[in-house]
Amino acid sequence: MASPVTDAGSRAAIPRLDFGRVSVFLGEKNGKYPDGNQVIVSGSDTRAVFDTPLVANRIGGEFDSADLVILGHVHEDHLAGLHRLPNAAVHAPEADLAAAQSWEALGAAYGTREERLPQMLEKFQRDFHYVPRPDAVGYADGAVWDLGQVRVEAVHMPGHTAGHSVLLVESEGVAFLGDIDLGGFGPYYGDATSSLADFRRTLARVPEIAARVWVTFHHRAVYTDRERLLTDLAAYAAKLDEREKRLVELLAAGPKTLADLVACRLLYPADYQELWVEDVEERTISQHLAELAADGRVRVDEAGFYRLG
Image 1 (cartoon, rainbow, N blue to C red):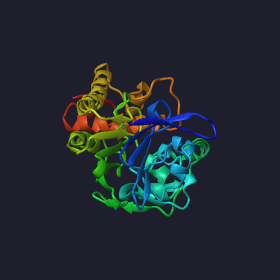
Image 2 (image 1 turned 30 degrees about the horizontal axis):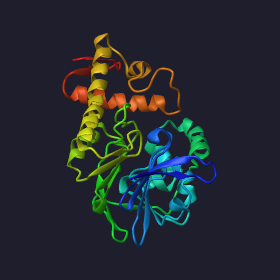
Image 3 (image 1 turned 90 degrees about the vertical axis):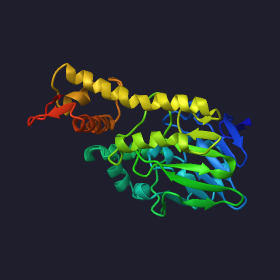
Image 4 (image 1 turned 45 degrees about the vertical axis):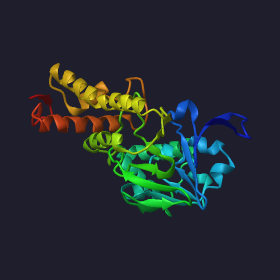
């Protein structure tokens, strides 16, 4: 059941969908980056929020009264409402925990070049209200939270980050997929802790999740039709093969260094400029090259030139 929620400050209506004790507040453009979609689970004993996107800053008391923040993973756009909840308990996946606790660890997890980190920190403080949470505690795969008449279970599904987890509200049949967002950009695995191989395995497991409603942090927002979910999942996963094909085409035109391939832009449009773009392109391309080399389809010479095998 959908209903708008009015932000008393801006008077802008926030679209809202309710599934029993689970409420989903949609960010701008269905949570398109830099925003996201906010999930709030209201148990009889505890109110929990899954991640904290920019839209969290416009929800009001229903968000601000949360007792518990469960982070499906740690990135700047998932921390944008944490500053409003200084007294709430914060739980993060064990592999992402340090990134939630300090900027130094978060910067290392991104893998961005050190000279760019001060600018990134300034941007995240300005645009995402970034604050570290040294009080955050870790949770493992299979962790369960009993909120009172409703339970949440963590399902570790890495790739996007090392700790990325799906949060399953068992009683309501709602699965929060986080940044398995099924958007047109495709899977993101460009951090220092990301893994293309893990993401492939994760995507193969998504259909196994027992749910009736699937919520993504970005882009698609809410699925209630399993067939549509599976269709979009297949298109999303196909982006991996499309990227591989593009790399093979680039190398078919002649040998190239990693820097040459980064300049060709596998992920981002040529005119898109952000502090992290080159680093993300480099890590993403490197993982595909490693897979191609392992299959004997690509080789690299002593001068660092990649060519088709």
